[in-house]
Length: 384
Ligand code: MRU
Image (cartoon, rainbow, N blue to C red; front, top):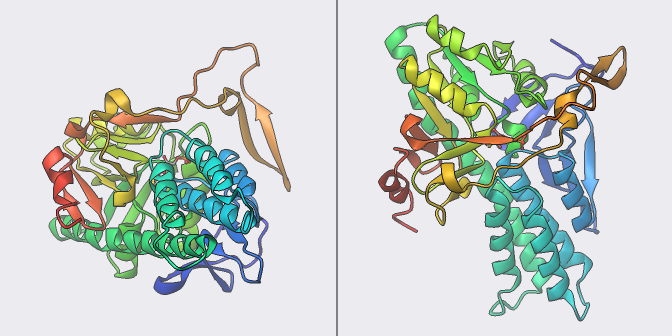
């Protein structure tokens, strides 16, 4: 087991209480104890080199945690933005301008990162509850309850995604009679989702049920969320995995060493186009060329029903060129950044790409598995 400076760190899954790290169970986001409201989180910016938790006391803390990517992953940043609204409501309780203050924070939190729709979905949901004048409760208390509901609902959604996706992995295992080789990109794990993960949830459940799995983990340049976060999660859970460069997937598919591709999504439009971490589209193309199923696992909170044609319309975050020019790692005990490209070079760094629906085998959601089509997605919302 790799041990990057946090001794005896062993992570296992315990369904109701999050992942076990050392002797403690963790989710990636939780409400702090104590009278003054605080939101606690696992700091993903320092993993896997250090395991640290952080505290958000104000909406600004929530905003900074999102923009500095201490918290990341679509479902998680949606939940953190919801937490930001709760903190804004509490901090401004009793003020004449409480509503105005909270509205201002809602605007800022929604814009913190442009691609994941979860920010908008969760902030709007929080604002509806906060502004619900028909309730006898104080607005900040309503905000607290809604934030807690979001934490629990997103966790439960991932658990159900796990159960729905498990059937797919079981089926592949039944047909081949050997280890199921899954390729994943970026981190759609429990760190990105409060608990279980989206793409990882079926993998964790399969492992628990003794279905042999092995995961090819794309390192996911430039920020290396695959190598730094997904590999860390899998290692701690004892799931066999191999980290590969982002360019290796197509070759492995040609050689018959990948049975299925399983990724998450930051926004899926109503026609089934899927935005996910840059490089996902190339994996979908390679999967199609090699007849390998390409599944996307996502909670319905990542579906943008207001938007059609994601390839054309989804806003893609353009990130700093320094992420490409510099690489972070350990030098002995010290976290350092080294330059791999002189500053004068122009660099483009789109954070996401959009995989057209035609390349997606199916969407795995908490409400079931559906086709990546307008009808398939509409079928998830029949009862709502
Ligand atoms: O830029 P990030 O690290 O927030 O990007 C995250 C991803 O692309 C994930 O694959 C994603 O949020 C999937 S949902 C768990």
